[in-house]
Image (cartoon, rainbow, N blue to C red):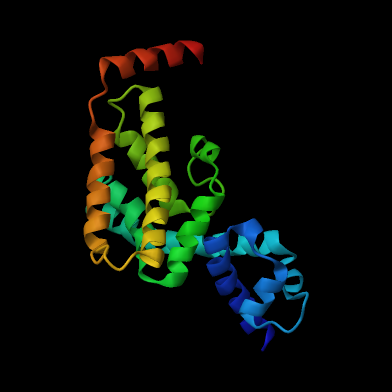
Length: 221
């Protein structure tokens, strides 16, 4: 097996194994055996170790999603829909949901959910990757929600991120491990209904209780 083929095999088999068993639940030997790598130091040689392999798997996933999202962002600009909440949420969700179509794509979604710490949701969106399309959508979302108090807008965008990552990962796991009597045939229905649900949450009128909590939060900050 050539070096390039070994590297690609490690990326694919690593994603599949990590998704099923967790990053710490897979040994280097298992990675080498699954990838058919004869060299017992292949992971270290190609990626500098397990952490480097995981980082590269995530990078490839994010780069793929960003490429898909860039096409939707271009369409939003062309159609002047930067204030359309559904178009914006679609631009976040649909590129991720495309990964549900393949076993490797589902593994990427499941691994991303394992590795995405909730605290990251409070950081500037997409700061960790070269993702101009993602940053554009995040900027437009904030602008489209200016009618909400700042703290409420922030918490809703945090919830949006968490729901996208976790629910797509859950769907990926269901598709991988579904019982025979559970009908999950319509990914389109799942995605469109998910977008509807997320948009409804962003548009919901804040309750008096939420507004009081937002004012209290503003005073403390």
